[in-house]
Amino acid sequence: MPIPSGFLAIKDLRNKEEKYPLSVCVCEDCHLVQLTHVIPAKIMFKNYLYIPSTSLTMLKHFNDLVEDIRKKSKLSSEDLIVDIGSNDGTLLTFFKKEGMKVLGIDPSENLSLIAKLKGIENVNKFFTRKQASKIIKKYGRAKIITATNVMPHVHNLHNFFSGVSDLLTDDGIFIAEFPYVPDLFRKNEFDTIYHEHLSYFSLQPLKILLDRYHLRINELKKIPVHGGSLRLYIAKKSLLQGEKQTDAFLENEKKNNFGQLKTYKNFSRRVRKMRIALVTLLKELKRNGKKIVGYGASAKGNVLLNYCNLDTRTIEYIVDSISYKQGKFTPGTHVPIFSEERLQKDMPDYALLLSWNFADEILRKQVAYREKGGRFIITIPYLRIE
Image 1 (cartoon, rainbow, N blue to C red):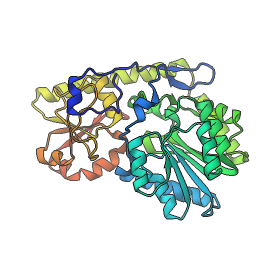
Image 2 (image 1 turned 90 degrees about the vertical axis):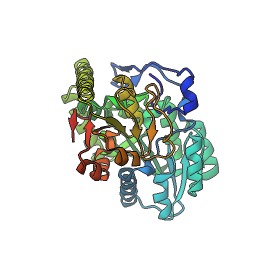
Image 3 (image 1 turned 120 degrees about the vertical axis):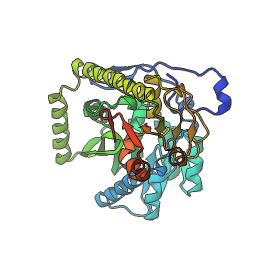
């Protein structure tokens, strides 16, 4: 499969596309789910096109996260806040509005530039233990470190967590958010599995990693973002509350057979059934003369399109709100991408929702399309039409 975030310019269509293996394995000892093949990170992240500031859902999420952190921590304007995988600086802008000292670190050149234009100081590098040492020398240690949906992208997890441990002050907090793999399996979120997501975490393997680097979970809670995630508050000192919550989560994972082979086989079986059902539905609609487009030029969507072999014979085009993606084509399937205005102009019969993790926001936004008879086809957590 091609890299799902590798959108193509029109000149790229005549070139041969690189395709890479996309298969998953699980460690029988710690139950970490991970890819079997790793693409060099510089290929995937040089110019990255996922931008959270374009989503009202993510803006609210980050604002709420900052408020939550401020309630739990006594922060002064001298305390350093570091966001690993800072993207376009969206999260840090909320801290900066409160007068906090902030620093982002992100490997994507285009997004680091956008962050700088917003006034967010950042380091255009991958976060490593060596990079943490450089940050300490220049800025000092961090009272708060955030990493929202970052850990799945990390190849060397040991290097990452040792860097976090070095950078964090003794009384600091590391806040990590990541898609929770038991939710991913339960909700059939197969399109979250792609090349840039190297690891898929349940709590068990993560706790093993944290323990090795003397980091303790002080609080954890499930949050709805990205189809079901965990938010962990991690520190160098343990709290009884965190230990009890952690034990409860680990017991629940065990009770629900997470880590047993049958759990993974059942997930695989459900995904194959969904593919058959979706392709059958789309073929039937096309036979009946219905016009079908896609909504949301997302990496998740490109996994779905390639897995189900859906090209312009089925999906005529895709609409998306991000200007950087408009005028480009989807990797592998070469479906053209236009602005959202095209949806209202053409009024296709159906729109296949390729960004289901923002379904509520999109359905509210496209009330007019639906009132005029347009319908959305949604695949996750189950196939339905709304």
